[in-house]
Length: 145
Ligand code: ATP
Image 1 (tube, rainbow, N blue to C red):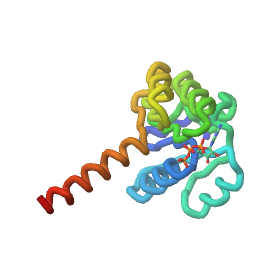
Image 2 (cartoon, rainbow, N blue to C red):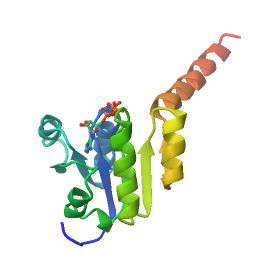
Image 3 (tube, rainbow, N blue to C red):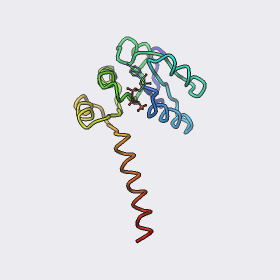
């Protein structure tokens, strides 16, 4: 992929439940997605669904450079449980000059460190889903008052 620019594409790191759903949904909406996962089995599982899936360790600056990460304006780090990998991948993408880095956090502490690194959007999927379900349930409960 070299030094080409990919202004409308999204570089997505980590094809877990969150990252996989995000990649699939973005692609269905018509966006170009380059998805990266370190696990060969996961890469093979997604290769039938996603157009661009690459096996690489996103904590490695050399691997990210080889993928042409500097050419992306937007990247998402969808690694949660592996906090060290999440922080290293996010930090490396920022070092490479990717202007907009989004990242998933699993705890407030994880999120605060991502923010301190300079991540522009920290998302908390479990917390956000809990709030959404509370609103939906509350709407239904109000129907019975
Ligand atoms: P989920 O979205 O399923 O809840 P999770 O928060 O438990 O995921 P992880 O399992 O830590 O997050 O990571 C999500 C995905 O990221 C996995 O498929 C894993 O293989 C991938 N991953 C982890 N470390 C790296 C890395 N260094 N480089 C690329 N991909 C990675």
